[in-house]
Image 1 (tube, rainbow, N blue to C red):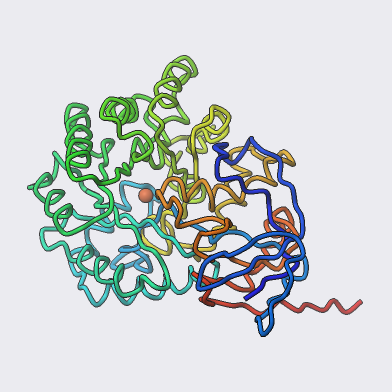
Image 2: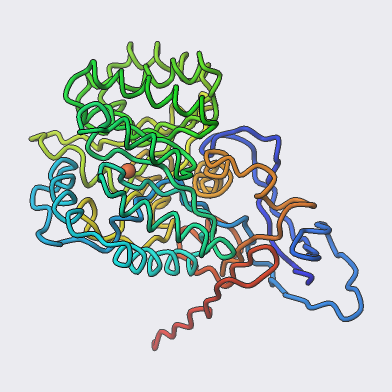
Length: 426
Ligand code: FE2
């Protein structure tokens, strides 16, 4: 297949800039040749070969597939079951989920997740990192997700994080459950230091998880300091372990909303360690603006981590959806455009270049977090996975919520959408 007249943002594999600030985008119309599911050539005006199928992009934007770097698939579509989260806080969400978790079945989880993954596919998402609650002696949700990871592998890459929603040191047999999850084949290990009973448990849980991940060769993705408490400082422990154990970019800190409330003197000192560690960050700007600041009067904190400062320091940051119609978010579709759109407003990243570069939060930066390596990117020799948007640039796609007209995975069409036709009658 030959994709002609595609507009590409400038993507340099060696580029380590983190989305907001960074390299200029050099749009240009190019052709992409796909042979046996791999990009065989990318360049201007490639000669058409006899009998070759042609997809004329018509100057529209082609991006690598969208990457969902943070979601909880096990809880999707459970909002209000058995009762809604009335306070809108993270902690009531955990209580509501514990009620719903009591009657999970593998079939129930698989049916809901399957629906949402297909929804995501329609928005051009081909890679998903999901956190799965393992504070369940039966590991029901994990069983379901492990099965789906295999069953859906040709359509979507699912990465599973063993997520101890109710704690590791504060939950009965928490450590053993994490070890069982590791034995069952998860991709990454999580933790939730701000939910542990004590600061000591928080530190202990992070030490435990980092050591286990190092031992098993797993990635780490911690729900870290998802609270408005400026004294919640699990992040410094996580970063120190990432640095000392040499885990570096294999470690991700998700949420880190307490950083929003850190004093600048502490943050400035911490930033050195964060940079040294080489770890990644995932912000969830939609859900955290909903969950955080709930017990503030006025002014109410936005509760989103310091995306701008981290990015400017060269730290890799991506954006995630976090939740779709569950105890933590009553809305959500899985369209990562919405996450970027809200994220740019909340983090005040609305300079022209910042907008232009912001696709990286849900593509290349997220791919780094997931360690997709050579399995991702618009480069010769890599799998021919890409999305075609109904817009001439990311700026336009973002502003107009342009649909993903086609999503190809290893050269195969995964999802398509007809362009919207709108008439105004005056
Ligand atoms: Fe989360």
